Each structure stands twice: as structure tokens, then as C-alpha cells.
Image 1 (cartoon, rainbow, N blue to C red):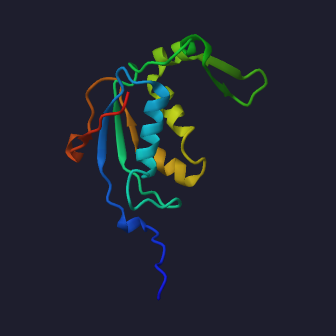
Image 2 (image 1 turned 45 degrees about the horizontal axis):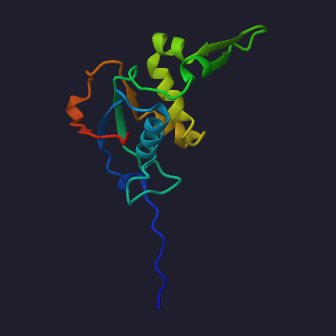
Image 3 (image 1 turned 180 degrees about the vertical axis):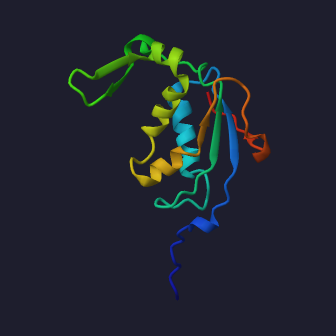
Amino acid sequence: MRAMKTFHAKAEDVKREWFVINAEGKTLGRLASQIARILTGKHKRIYSPGVDTGDFVIVLNCDKFVVTGNKMDEKFYTRHSQYPGGFRKTILREQLRVHPEVVIQKAVWGMLPHNRLGRAQLKKLKIYKGTEHPHAAQQPKVLEVKA
């Protein structure tokens, strides 16, 4: 009796789809984890860990998600210019006012692999502030995120 071989997806086997997610009223962490699942392709039967099998995700209303507790005033984002005294810290409320798309992008990036594969998967994430997006030609499917 022959043993069955393990299936490993190849880049040409992957069929990519486009999904639209409305972030309005959704919790940031739960939203980010479900976006990361679609970007990595774990929702597909063809999933292979070392191959980018994921789909494209369009996030609308990126400034209207919710967070629990006191995260609006206690969660902060840091950056450093690599110069002495170049450390900068921004709270979530201020980051939402200035660059709301960065908040979702950083939350999703924390759930992706931190290597070439993760960077390729993150490029398939498109984030917009309003309800309009320029990807109508791709005929994206509306994806309902669990609350």
C-alpha cells in the first residue's frame, strides 16, 4: 500500500479573491485577527505555511472601529528617528485623528509573520477612511466579520 503524499501549494495554484470588510463598530483586535487569517490564506483548503495563498482585503471606515477599556488613552505607538532624542510616542486617540489606517495596518502586521512572506501578505491589505474604494473592477465580495 502506498502512502499519500503531502500536498504543498505552488504560487501558480493560488486563485486570489477580493473581500470588503466594513470596520464600523467592530473591535480592533478581533477585526485584525480575521483580516490576518484571510491575508495568510488559512481559510482555504490549499493553505501552505511557506506560500502566499491569501486573498486581498479592502477595509472601509477604518476610523470607526471600537476598542475596549481605556485603550484610547492608554495604548500608544512608538517610533524612533535613530537620532539622539528622536523617540516619539503617540496615543491611540491622536493616531486615529492623524492616520487611522496605520492603526489597523500595525494591528494586522503584528499577526503576520515578520519576514518576506509577511511583507508580501501585508501588501494585499487596502485600507480606506470612507466607504468608497477604487477596486470595484475586482468585484470584491462583502465579508461579514464576527462581532
